[in-house]
Length: 174
Image (cartoon, rainbow, N blue to C red):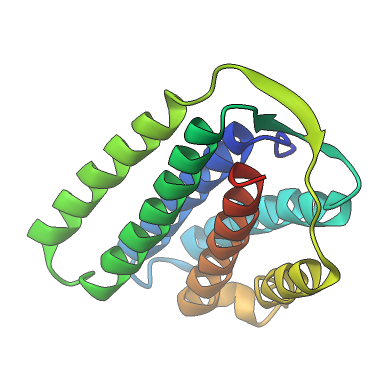
């Protein structure tokens, strides 16, 4: 599964990765088999992100032609990122986590409602942008020893979310 080159594609990737992060957090230390399944899901997501990173600046993204919609998309993507930070900060507060997940769902729904009239256009990523995104991608890689550790899997999944947030914000503001 590849990431569609649009704000919608980035948002779908972010939503799927959010579910992966939630599953990792909820797994606790879990069984070795469960941790290995999560590591495999992370590796699949990482391969999709790697494919996206290889094409930055070279392929066309579907970009909203209405600047008001593009600004709204960028704002919603930023709010999704801020919400993720709150989820991590208050992970041990179940009542707040539930509220943050509900808010995040509403943000994804609002973002989905912005996908309408798009036009194909090249979004330029500077070499500095690409280098920063590649560093995040490298951090998400798991070696054999790390595949057994929940913390390493969680860190990798969070790194992929950061990539999606950076790419999504840049595409939305193009």
